[in-house]
Image (tube, rainbow, N blue to C red):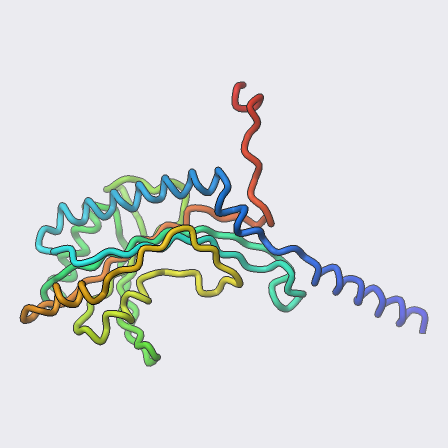
Amino acid sequence: MAVVALAFGGYRLAGLALSGNPEPDLGAFASSAVVRTDDAVASRWLGQQARRLATRAGWLSPAGHGMTDECAGTGGDGGMFAGGMGVSVSCQRTDTWFFEAARGRPASIRRLERVLHRAGGWGRFATSPAGPASPPVLPVISAAWTGPAGPRPRAGKVALMLIWVQGKDQLAAAALGAQQTQVAADRVRYLHILRPDLKAVARRSFGRQHHHVLVVSFGDTYFSSHAISPPDPPSRDRRGR
């Protein structure tokens, strides 16, 4: 009985210790110097990608723009079965561009993929089919940065998504799917949000016959950590050496 009681007591103490794990301080991460610096680098890189696409794909007409910048955290005070075993923080910026475009025929898609590869270094294009859901899940073409063309991303994890929208009723679902938000996170802290004007996009893109919308989403997960607080900035003595 003493052995059983000791074992049970040890398990209970361990469970209490696990359930007391602190949560990551997303506010501290979002305002930290390291995240602000990495965010600025990601913003410049994503802007370069958008400008290269607009320059090389002259047949596309810009119709709208949206942006989401967020830090997401998982783990912390959730116990053994709710993420309490580990902590993870990641910060991600997503630039979403809406273009008025002709119908997304296979030839047009291949042409766009060639432009993205030569101008921005994107490759390994793969298509995910549509799925039954509400709102509907539209077919998505995803890609990874493979180089050597285009500016090299820093150290973050970057991604590209393409969604062809055939009608006004699909536009909201496409915008939601293109945000690349970190849906599995326990908590999210938004640094910046620019919501696209979907009504204006629809007026520009669907007012003419046989025109669709191409949604292009560039994403950069520019920071990640397994700590509960951001690293301290280097001291003046260390910077001066």
